[in-house]
Length: 225
Image (spheres, one colour):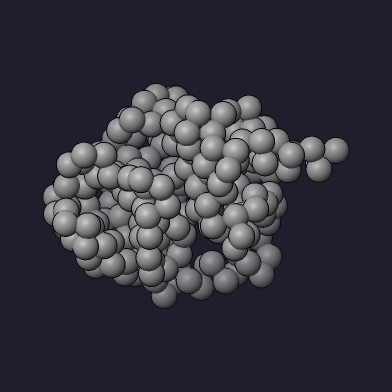
């Protein structure tokens, strides 16, 4: 589904939203969903008249399995460079455990990890500080995980991973406290996002937030009191 010109949400991907950015002959994939999504991603790319090898970067907003689950297979099929923040790179590579969540949700996620065939993979580009890549400003927005990042085009749009979510109608919502590794940092990152100017916000879960999205995020923050 093309959201705006050059920005697609890949249909049918299980797990988190998976986005494709088309810029001329160069493609950028943002997140990959759960394990088992690689064929859907490649078929979508081919449906646009592109080739798998046209994907230059796979940028991962953070290292939860519903975002990185198909990263290894997509890299194998495309030759793309995997990009992730340094704080989350060990989880992607299988060198440390993924985020620990307490309570029933944590137990459910632990069971999912047991049954899901996640293939660890080394990142090609490890981000250590705010930088730029593939036409985006990379903004470190920790809280949901230590290495969560947002991808920002000033005045236009922002991909926020799980730093924010939205409902099915595209209304911005606060991220889940239960799923945050550090709720204080989550709130600070949310405030930092609200200071940016963008018309379109693309979350990891939920529908796109359109039409002066940055003002809508600011209004959401006001409800915190």
